[in-house]
Image 1 (cartoon, rainbow, N blue to C red):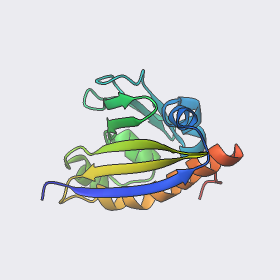
Image 2: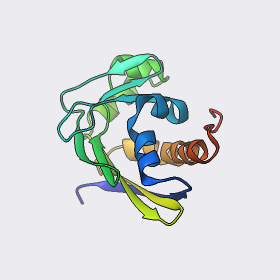
Image 3: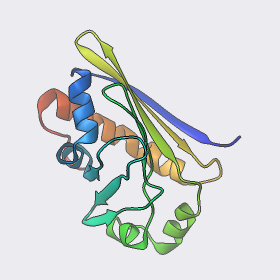
Image 4: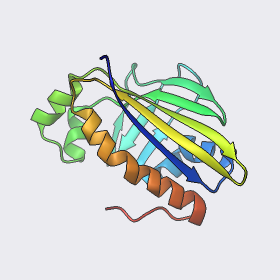
Length: 158
């Protein structure tokens, strides 16, 4: 087996265009996720990840698919020492996850009458620990996204 996969689907009362905006506009991602994502959102473009005051840019951190407002995919961020320190990860854990094959995440958006179905698929290195870390994090992020789009306010930070 070449990967582990996390799949999560949710239904959100929003338009596909509004969901796309929430997935791609840095001011939105920062509000419900705590992560600022900066890109021009075209295939092959760099993706700059800012979290906890640390900005991570890497030539392998790129947009893989951009088909507004239906599908978005990108490679996951690079695990730098500064990033790890800013989120409270020890160097031993950071080195372990940095050695894994880079993962990628895909967001599929399907209109469903007055709502959209969002399916998130994140593929991981089969022998790694990033799968477990992200699998615990995604439900919180996606619940906050749903709440943000439906109420105007994200969930409080845990």
